Amino acid sequence: MSNTLDKIEAKINAGQRLNKEDGLALYASNDLTRIGTLADKVRKKISGDYVYYNVNLHINLTNICIGQCKFCAFGCQGSSKQAYALTEEAMLNRIANAAKDPSMKNLHVVSGLHPNLPYEYYLNMIKSIKKNFPQMHIKGFTGVEIMHFVKISGKSIKTVLAELIDAGLEAMPGGGAEILDDDIRQKLCPNKATAGEWLEVARTAHKLGIKTNASMLYGHIETIEQRINHLLTLRDLQDETGGLQTFICFPFQPNNTALEDSVSRTSVWDDLKTMAISRLMLDNIHNIKAYWVMLTLPIAQLALGFGANDIDGTVGGEKIMHAADVHSQKALSKETLIAAIKEAGRVPAECDCNFNIVRTF
Ligand code: V47
Image (cartoon, rainbow, N blue to C red):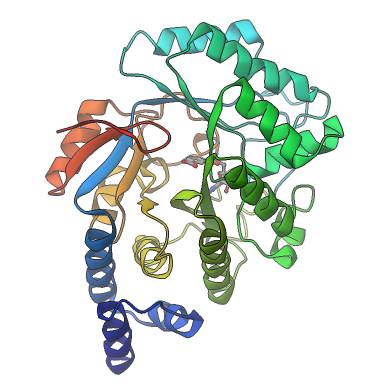
């Protein structure tokens, strides 16, 4: 195995792209520190010592969802006791409250696929945010939500995206990608966008000039080969469009989901290995996110030595991961994030949803 890692290291040093066999070999190795060191070296070459964070609020407009994805603890039926859909007033009040902190300028909007709310509800929410809080940067709607809007409005992907961009949408989150394999999607999340549809939304967004994120939900029913294929699919998309700005690994959190009795939580070993392998395979994506909400802050800090250069944000109001009982705090102060980044020996860089740097420390 060390011979295999030697060859992979030689390729990395020569600036050569890793292939599928290399990705599988990295997963087969238990030399975590060596894989981490390789990823850290690549991270430094690609993006230097900045670690990006942002001061942000999560807005999940509704948890009522026709998706019924097996991995999700957040979505529910309209008849459920927890069901809600925010009114415009309730949403604006939440933003007004968060905006008391003048550095809070980023909104992350991801919601359930509501069976009855019209497309105009979502469009008007974006218009209303921009009208009332012009200083806010809005990253919103996964590729899956955009496909839902396409279906309920009868409009094309291009028209829906163009209208949302016109209303004030500036970037898109990476959710909904899960594993871009329709066999897996059929078993896990058959009621939502296919792999091809998710990719087509991202491609169209990039053509229209907005950047999107991409994610991988791992540690459920997928194989290691499917993880590598997923990374290669994203790498191909990035070669084509250049519009992916950060990649996020979501380790599956089974609590309160349909899979909780059959799947256990991934190990920290797997989380760090997956972070590092993602950095090594995705040689054309600038940022790799250690999402502290899933990893907890200490593991996210550690992941900064395994290829990550983005730690997400203060994340007020997050509900999707907390519905699955993640072990992290509800939100963090920016001071805590800055201290955690500095402790890891890196330079905290506050940014907006398009990675424009606001200040460094
Ligand atoms: O698509 C849901 C994941 C995503 C679980 O782009 C789960 O910066 C693990 O898009 N265990 C939605 N993962 C959230 C999302 C997001 C969140 C934070 C940052 C960004 C970004 C995007 O959440 C879903 C799914 O992949 N997810 N439930 C769960 N139980």
